[in-house]
Image (cartoon, rainbow, N blue to C red; front, side, top):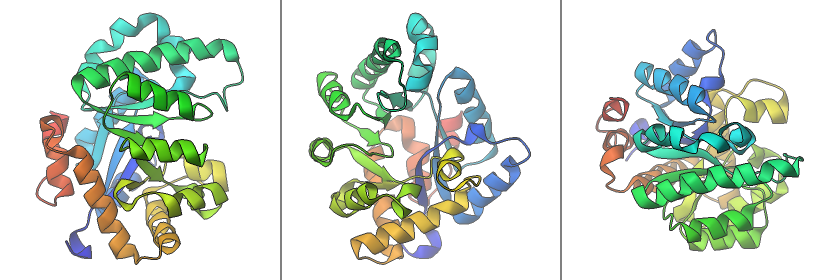
Amino acid sequence: MGDAVTVLIDAHAHLDQYEDVVLPKVLEELEAERILTVSVAVDPPSYARAQELAARSRWVVPTFGVHPWRAPDYAGQLEALQPLIDQSPMLGELGLDYHWVEDRSAFPAQRAVLEHFLRAAGSQQKIVNLHTKGAEAEILALLRAHRVERAIVHWYSGPLDVAAELADRGAYFTIGVEVHTSPLVQELARRLPERLLLTETDNPSGVEWLAGELGMPHHLPPVIAELARLRGVEPEELKETVRANFRRLLADDPRLAGVAALVDGAGSAASLHQ
């Protein structure tokens, strides 16, 4: 597939978090750069917002999850989340956060919410999009326990030996904007098997956190260029590697047929948004 038609992959972003005034520019950049963007949710309202954006752009893939920071608000009403879990073709953002969350009393709620989603992912054979801060080994164990076979590990910053174990299980890893500044992320970018590489922005907050400016889709190509440099390949080759990896992750899942067609350059994600 030549560069003219290569679809770029942003496997983890929060498009619902943009202000309305910025959204036309965001969607314009997605179309111009052909960036397929997985817009993960942190709670039900953010999922609804992502679904609205998917109706406006073929490049937006909305997925439902409850972020660990929001878990205490939902741990007591897990069954009420089930219709959204069943509807969403992938699940995310999910996970545990023992690094940024200092209140240990919130940890049981995080685990309860994550395990509820992982049970569903295992039984429904869905892809999960994971937040693992400070809980990498525990999440690895939970993926095994719940037999979750397809996982995207977002912005990994934990021990490299645990990353290797996750990779051995076939987990895909997103490399994002911190590849420009973090020695750990750079080392991970060098070490990961080629077949497990994905890219992300964590827009709009990833670049904001690192550089104090609003993250936009145009921040993805520099990530691709730096990742290619670290791995000693040309950016065009890296783009195709990531596209092919994401396509392999989708497999022949009928719930993601529209997304797969778009990644293949053969259609839109309309079937996902119906």
